[in-house]
Length: 266
Image (cartoon, helix red, strand yellow):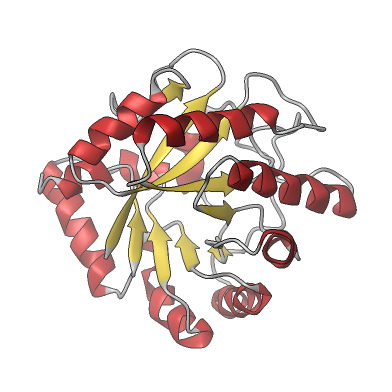
């Protein structure tokens, strides 16, 4: 089971978060050093969340492209860099889309194209909109990690607080927690649209879906151990126990804020 370390990259100065001293909102100056340290600890794959300084419903993605280019240049080509593709950290209302379907798709595809042109190895659309995976795959031909089964959840609070996204927003495009068949069906569709990897999010509450999605799609399927899950983990031994449970459930990869700790054997 591969381990993937999330990294928050901020257009402004480095800021502390509730996720611990090693999971800060890193400035573009500090982020490469954090990634380099993680590489030294054995982490080989990273999921970047690029957080602009100001909200904008019509972003150009120039800073995001510059950020990826700098990180790739300073960390070498040994690390695999995947970039989360969504609008929630950019839009003024915190939603994962703007209120025009075609415009949403244009923005998301342009975002993916910008970071791929800058050297990203993979993109991970997390917006839960129809056709995003299809459009990104069609335009870029790049490797796509799909948040194929992403549920409405209280387990995202650490991320939303870190980037100042309103927690009370109702996101009807995310799955209801009891919708097992919908999660499998959506994953099948994203796989048909061109996704190379499928995912469940949040992780622990969705263990029962990893194998069914893998069987239904034929794609490597992993889990995202979210910020809220991470905040509930105490002792280092609990991190290893959780990782072993994900592995037992058949996860091909695990995105976790503790990847750097797990890579060193705790």
